[in-house]
Image (cartoon, rainbow, N blue to C red):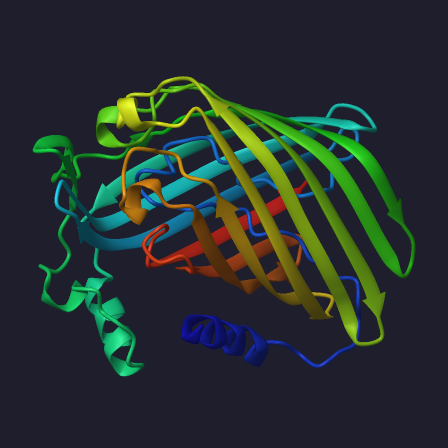
Length: 335
């Protein structure tokens, strides 16, 4: 929560006074960047607003995640220590008044990173538990999982980055009413993730994933600014992949909920919870088989030309089920 308040204060200090109330509150387009989760097709897009007919919406996102989790039982041991960098280029095109079609192409890179010292100092300054981070080697890459004496995952070298699993997606508008004081929306979304990434390098899962979700949002524009509430709920079906194949679940549920406030027409502050059920079974370790709950906090800034920049920081509310800390940046524009 300390990260949330620092992020909120940084954005607020840059805000100009004003009561304009037409900054809509939109979701953070990010999901858990755990190396064992981001390889699957959790949809980053959960907006309830469909691209207008003939309009193209482009988004370039970047997620930098610092992972550190280590845990063991009598017959299991896991270490997830390293940083991941994920860039995603997404395009959504309005093909009719009610339907849009899109594609997302990710680029994924792993490494030892540079944030270990900063995160350790942050934990020390605010008296937060280190969980072994302060005694572990700094800036290393080690993704390792052993069960019953069998090494099932071992990644120690970053290598080069590459294209991840590409997703094709679509959306259908169910309800959309807008006037001077409010904008309420409801939409269905689907996505199909293809195994185009290298699963050995954890740039993909090796599975074909299909998702279906319902997304809704309510925005009210008042003299105090815009107030927004949004959420989504969905499920994902997966074929057998290459990563921990014998422990992979073939069905996962996921959802988001968020709220925000836009004090001016060019800035907003928001918080969001992302959750999903386990991707794997057969483990007593939360890092492998725990349900995830992640908090994303920050806001959005609108620049001239109607460019929108999301800035968010995420934390693992359910400890060790998501990266300890991750930074999200997303730049979007509708043409």
